[in-house]
Length: 243
Image: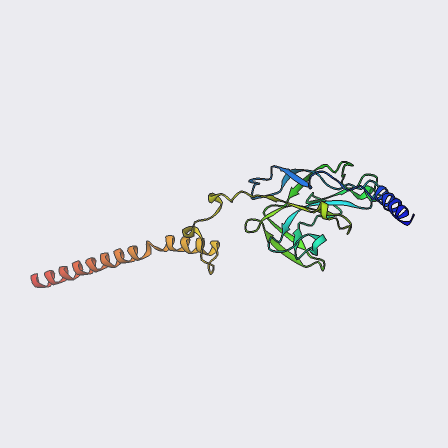
């Protein structure tokens, strides 16, 4: 009898437990995520599938542009901390550019503040704007850190929103920036020394160009005066001999 009651209780628990996505792991696809221009902002289309959707549940997922530590455990479900294990480009809440998106669960109480919704089937489609290959992130103490995506791997991060930790919804998908063009990099011969500004170099060149002919003119005048004096002396001597 006790075994029958225990079996019934277990069956009831399984029936009432929240459904967990049974299909493939969460995956993100980025349209335009390869060879992103190395200057200015670029908008990418981001789609996802296989995420765990909790209809009516609190929160949802964050979709963000940023960096994760490849040498450590960056995921929040494994102890990862923002500003240390992963960094993202913070957006302006008053005038968001699109560096990050909040996608609420369908029917969530937080849906009014979201920029989109996670489908009941665990799919989504949104846009993310990259700030360029270099961005500034903030840690929990609002300390700024500069991240250069030309030297470290950046990409699209998804995590549980509003502090709700959900390992199923934690992903990182790389974004690759194109190398800056060679024409944008000045050659060493054209680069002024740190001690001289371009304006100072231009002034020096102007002074040199205007003063270069002066020694030539002075020398010519001196030579002409010398020849004239010699002629006058020669004439005086010739005249005195005749007298």
